Image (cartoon, rainbow, N blue to C red; front, side):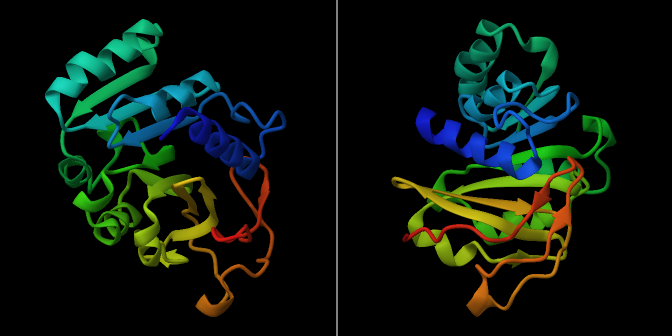
Length: 212
């Protein structure tokens, strides 16, 4: 995710969770899980905005040792991070019964995989069933335009889309994990009832279509 897009995406997240400054998290204990972490840019961005802790999941040992850990070290945030060298599928399977080994469920999860090498539907369904997310968790998903059909308004019992935006060639969706009721698929952008989140912010389901 490019720097400008990452900044705009975080601004959208901050707005959704009720940040008064629209820059930093509204609480001091926010925990972030960065799946398909790569350079770690998203998880590191969360720390720069006041996040308490970030976990990174990256399968490539070379990327972990030569890129990810170096980026973390260069910013001096080692004490706020945990790196898991594993495939995302394996990591989710390892923690499918309990999230205790990683300190409990996360407040935010970023899901930015290599577009055409994974099944969004399968992994998002796996996340929906995972104890790694709680009812207050916000999930960030980056996807390609051709994968738009996989970005359903509702996934499983909990994941419900609350934002869907385009930034140039990058498409980003936000999901809340509270299992709220949604309008019919043909009216997916209709205004939804107000819902209070853990962060004390009212979140609506509407947003701009990606072709607007």
